[in-house]
Length: 400
Ligand SMILES: [Zn+2]
Image (tube, rainbow, N blue to C red; front, side):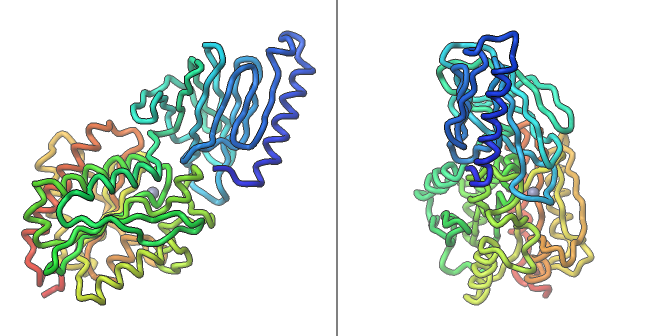
């Protein structure tokens, strides 16, 4: 969770905390004691800030009276504004704690949430400026999770994929290992005579949790009885967690090498994107045809980044028809389609389009979109996509 060079920062924090103790004229020494025992935990005044878990991130911590001041810094720069934080707070005695989070290297993005079990989350009331977040929590001996979004950990992906193992024709396996040697899991749902493949990716960008919250129901729906006819014609490749190192380390955006994976689909310098490229090439070498791909992300609004219908992809109007159908199914939800190209930038959807001559989209859910809406949109998006693909004769994916 922590990189070694943050150790020195943490030591400085502990010293400055001690300095506060000496200089303090109002509080007793006991009230202002600060002890930082290692880089993944921060202790003081009976308060514990613990960031020794998958997806946690705190880069510096000072406890002073009942105030906890945390600093969040990015894995490397330049980087976009996605300061990610996650930690557990507890206190020997039940007490209210003021939390101040200072962002270095990026502006505020994620609203704080709390959870006792790491599964059910509640929003916290907060105040924020570009560089600072403030809120209060009641801490007790039972640790409370605090995070910028719900925690969707590497373990959660494994659990989810294995829950589908009992489904017919689902094979869960390892695509390979990440930069730091973590498993990159995949699900393949196949029938022996199927040639056409749908590809689903997620979590290139670790904090983009609402994308994950969309991917799960999208795929679940396809693997339910509703997807039976679809699965009789189409194979499905799901790689839900492309950047497990970034997820484990609580990175703002990059992989363990400090690279944005959604800018590597041209250079292929990163093992994570290379593994997927090689897998898709193996599918094609085996006589398969990639017909469509989705890549799940989050941003400040719900938007589908698509390839233009006049880009020469097969069939040209597939996405137009699909999203029109989704809009018809969900009149209360605004389906924003933003067609565009990003040549030479190394974006996944562009790579799919240029390599396989078929459409691909970046499926973006808003950071703050209601979670029930994310779920409902995903199910309807999947229903309508399955219909649209089933309505497309196989030769149309080849431009015939
Ligand atoms: Zn993203």
